[in-house]
Amino acid sequence: MTDPNSLCQNQLLQAMPAEAYELLLPHLELVDMKLGEVLYESGGELCHVYFPTNCIVSLLYVMENGSSAEIAVVGNDGIVGVAVFMGGGTMPNRAVVQSAGQAYRLRGQLLMQAFNQHGTIHHLLLRYTQALITQMAQTAVCNRHHSIDQQLCRWLLLSLDRLSTNELTMTQELIANMLGVRREGVTEAAGKLQDAGLIHYSRGRILVLDRPGLEARVCECYQVVKIESDRLLPALTKVI
Amino acid sequence: MTDPNSLCQNQLLQAMPAEAYELLLPHLELVDMKLGEVLYESGGELCHVYFPTNCIVSLLYVMENGSSAEIAVVGNDGIVGVAVFMGGGTMPNRAVVQSAGQAYRLRGQLLMQAFNQHGTIHHLLLRYTQALITQMAQTAVCNRHHSIDQQLCRWLLLSLDRLSTNELTMTQELIANMLGVRREGVTEAAGKLQDAGLIHYSRGRILVLDRPGLEARVCECYQVVKIESDRLLPALTKVI
DNA sequence: AGTCGTCTGTTCGGTATCGAACATAGGGTT
DNA sequence: AACCCTATGTTCGATACCGAACAGACGACT
Image (cartoon, rainbow over all chains, first blue to last red; front, side, top):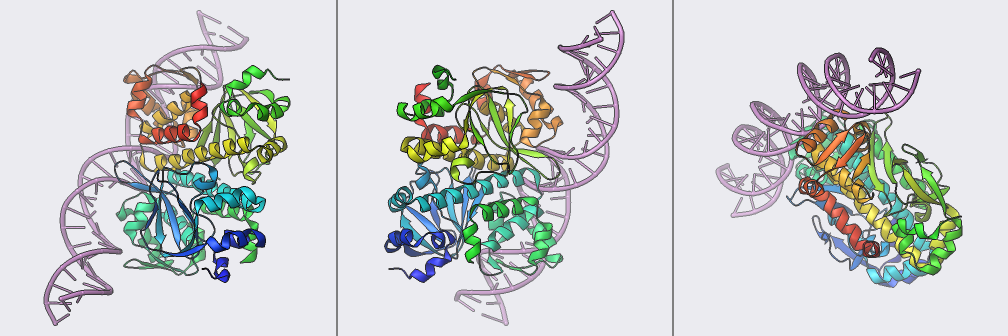
């Protein structure tokens, strides 16, 4: 069973009205999410959805030649598996744990019931999905127009927003896979940030020293996503 | 008033069950969509939604410095204004008529009613939205990994799929705005396609001579979106 | 027929990113 | 303490795309 208090760690669960999540509560299962774990393969049926608490999940597209690109990230602000209630059941993307932690797991069918029967849950999930759409759209824009330096800043800030620490466990190699660039490109960009005193890098650990400094360097894409998320899900930011 | 027969030109309307669209029918208004017309500005309230018949609408993000990037295109396969039923009301994108024609216009509130009251419409629109999500995700991937040549092929095929002709009215300058690249880049890419005998270009008109040839050159992104759309909305392809 | 605006084609140097190869250095293991 | 694996740093030339400037060419309009 599940400790009700820890539900607050996921903002979507937290935003649900009492009568709604009492319905879900008995079926929520707190599971460990290990770094690199694949939750869904591209096109694979989604048996469960996940409400991350202190982990981050990346949605990736993996190309035929093996290279990849991140489409969006989901943390304690959202839910992994929107295709369940959108009706498609699957998506042509892979979902990978990018930062280890825990998540509440729920059978897809149960979420469907809640989605169909409770207007509040319905509205909440659709608004979250719209925020996710904005994140994807802005990823497309950023990939087109912005430098690796700027994209790295955006990526760091998106990750920071979804964690409670200022330390990320993440090699440059992995970041490169997410951004869809070469590892050397990330090395160079991270080097600049380190020289500027904004981060400290050491063997798979990134310490963010100066968040305002990152925000000063990031492209507009980050703010667009953040503002839109706050607009669509105001309850989430109020309660924190 | 509206000629019921022409409703068939939009596949979403066409796929609605009889009792559902009889509800909407009296409120559908056939309107002219002029090239370059802006349906929504970024962040602007969506009073109406549009069901394109023989026009194409682009969803663009316009950056602070004025450059732009296409996020997705909507033709007679879909609806412009998903933010109405997703709950956000607005999106941080601009919707522009990319290819002139006509569309059925409907007040957002009326669509909301239909969305909430008719399960069939509800399912249909959410599944379409998921297809749109796939298109956006793949745009992000394509922007990251593929050459202008490949992206032009993808763009031409996406447009062709939404028109009944093999002729597009579109200057290279406009295509460049959509793809978020320089006009010269499009000139060069289009020149290659013309040399290969796949298209014929002349002052704002593109004649597609060899569609299979384009399909042979396009990146996997095009097929991913097409397959996913067909999967999510099978009724639409069956009836054609 | 001539003019003009727009669309397309071409060129130039500059820059960001790529692809590959290799060097260095933490940090855990034996 | 020595070792090794992995993460990070550095270099090289190649390439794709950019930014700007300009040349040609089609077609509409007078």
